[in-house]
Length: 499
Image (cartoon, rainbow, N blue to C red; front, side):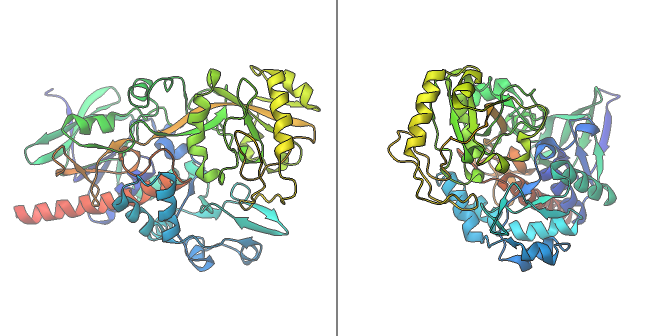
């Protein structure tokens, strides 16, 4: 160990995605020297953030607020769009409702109250935003109406967000090491003092006054998935970064950190059955406008229970529970123009047929007779007297079925029909480390571990069973920024006491 390379800095950040880079930028602008350790090579940097659309949820009180974060918003966009209002109270209520009121109330309050302020901070640090036309609003009667509390995405999607944050961090003097996998926290009786890591195959360590863990969850680790999420989760399709295998969380647990949150829960979506793991384009999220059937040809979920934003992160689990861990999404010509862009790629498991009978024979793994019978019953149950409107929860439902469809119910009758084979994809895990409102990691005695902070998917307690779309990126930004501020303040306080 005598020739091990030793680095020294004020703060070391483990990870290099949205939460990590917000932490690094925040710590740097608060006067700290910062070193970032990124496990991935530079070409694959950014963790799960790179695999997102860059869609982010935040509270706002109308178009004047939106102009603060989108100064290029044109008058034409404003005139042709109903952006609505999404208050802090609505955001908080959504957090509570979709997590079945298990979300940590203090962390959820910080997330919702600081969301707009953090969006302005990101804008000040050269992250650019645009409205999400097409995925979050449809043109009805000449006007786009946004729904579901999520209206903007970063320019360039997730990769654009990561690139903007990395560029800003570098311009501020943050040092980033790629191919640098953290393996152990250095600690003594006074707290955490740095990180041992592997850099390009060589052991190294960084001595630091504080450590911020923002290295994601364990969605890419089949052993941890099965241990914590349960049987069949080793069979789930892994989305996002292949580098999110849980070491950051484990390092903290190894020194007595307290775990928190929904360790048996995760963000799981429906997506292409045969697309390779860790590739983009997996999600297939237009299911509210069609039906989903299992191997028996039966519907098993209320596709129209709510806006896609509030159901997609839990419906993957339901697909995993079906025979063979797959399903088919079925659409007719009335809605194919509403399908999101991920349905139009080349790597899509899709079949098309002019009649339902022809379609039934093409659906691999599906009982044709069961499928046709279930579609017949579904078509007969649709309330055709209620108008269809994709921009609102229109109440166009079914009646008399064991599995109801609550909104956007349209009979499957206009060919050609399109069907897409889907399976369960895991995006990120909900269990993680217990932090307090200052993002300090707590120990088994519920006391702060001096010098250790956490943000992003490494934190548990915010999401249970489900999550509101876009809340993950927002949480990473809010708590990443907060971790950087508090870690920098901790250092200053420590130096004052020691001087």
